[in-house]
Image 1: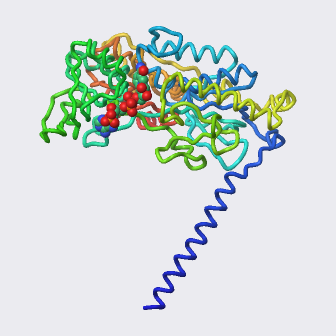
Image 2 (image 1 turned 45 degrees about the vertical axis):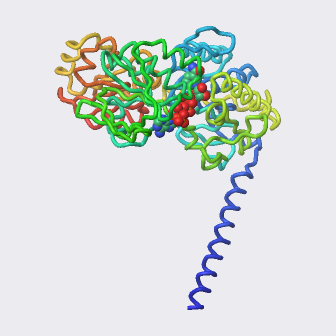
Length: 484
Ligand code: NDP
């Protein structure tokens, strides 16, 4: 018995010693990166400043770094233009009265481009933090080496994690009112949440829906007084307090209702609705960085003092991915500016100068070359004007791929270059079409489109698969391959 006990103690101690040694070794490895400009010359596809993310923080960082005459590449990521591109009116951007969020983002992008920043419609899939320059792999299959990285990946909508949510995501459950509001004309919908986003989403869907009910779990909204005043002025918006959604109900066509629980009366009820707009906050997009960067308990990237420096040399973070306190567009832009300046200072401090730039000129990453290399043929996208045209095409062509989008859906615009590239990959073998779901509503209705982007795949006139998501070129190719 005693011997057994001693064996357990020895076993656990050894485990602890080896575990600690492994952890120490690993952490030393990841922090002992050698930043030596001489190693840069051996690499191909070099990027001096790589910005990941295209919200206020990303474009502001790109603007400042580009103005410092540095070579900047911005990977726009899954939500081009960030959260501001999904809002409508913005009243609190300093110096501007009543601007539209997408307009601000377009101007910011143009401004960064005018100083030389290159915008690439691709998403970073992996960052290797064990070597410098940092090795980056993208969704569309590009590999490049970054001397500095500015992480501005923002935050993604948090989900409720209740029955029915995943099943009906894209079929009535949505996190993008500006994209999906047009699919709820004359219907009753709910918005879940009590913050500024919930108020904003309710105002975006109110012009389309018959009744909009904001479901707030506490007895008060967290939204600013100004936003609460705005929703009070809209006749078809109602706020219901102390109410939680416990289940989302539906059938083959999508959402039919929600099950509600009143936390005061302890009563459960059912409410018939066609749409559930989620606005319950955001979670920072740090998944691919966590294994080599320090993040806090909630997943936000830790930055040092008044700089945007992270725990890794030459890696900076800006905006909602590192700010859990303010989470305002203006603050994100400010931190992006700091990150841009920090990246410039880092490069200079480590000997990056005109001579180095000249020497690596031939080895710099060229996004235009990458695009043509991956898709050498011409694209043939047909813009569908009416249902008859689509039905005729479907009857005539053996494989038809249809991308349903709306004009104000940032994710749809983001996917377009990948969609065009997939169309080039399947030239002669499949017909790729684009359908503006708002402009051809009868076609959207006929195929039960309630969220965009939705991609349908037809073989010999029959629907064989559909996806409601922003797909990379790789994913699109695998999706279409099913019909070959
Ligand atoms: P917030 O974190 O401010 O609000 C989230 C809301 O969702 C809260 O009311 C919270 O309730 C509620 N919530 C969280 N989890 C659940 C759940 N499981 N079930 C039901 N309700 C839940 O996030 P926002 O996205 O609204 O705003 C983020 C930041 O962006 C804020 O700083 C905001 O000011 C800013 N913003 C500004 C805008 C503008 O000025 N035009 C527009 C949009 C956002 P509870 O209060 O009980 O925690």
